[in-house]
Image (cartoon, rainbow, N blue to C red; front, side):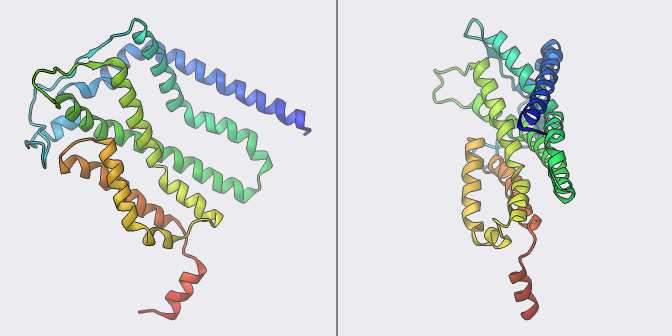
Length: 267
């Protein structure tokens, strides 16, 4: 194909992607009132599954959070005239992108695949499946664990008894999007390590050498994602992210130099 032929094929793929996202967004726009009540704002109520699972935890906030209260509830308010409409639209497109992401990648893959060798196609298929699974798994951890714990702490935190916590709709949604997106991207760490290892840019020894620095960085990141004062909530975020760090090291094949050293020094 000529350059213009490739460009025309790419335009066709982009039009299909645009049409797919618009159709999904329209469907989610219709269903968004139900999704908002039963999914997005579900962590605002004490009926959320995580709260029932951890309702035996009754701490003072210094080491353990207080999750034993059954009257937890967060009321959202709207302080801008067009906020509800804009949130309705943005949430619909956000849901369309998240749900349709595998199809978007598949359409892009249909454009790129004819120019790849067979072994390159096999590697790309593995990366496609693994990347999607890890992104959705990370988003699920963010939704079911990280965001509810952060919401429960921040909604109950008071600098003074004279200040009542009133959560705005846009503030809630910004935090919701950020936590789910950050956790989804964090769970792509093993995929990134695998790709860099395949390209020869990353060695397994890197993870061993910088493990201490990684622990400090992950602790800081966990503290940013869950700005709570208790160790329990911090550990809930730290443990899975650190497990991703160690899993990333296992996905990188050992270098030939390392294998020779192990063979010559079996002890």
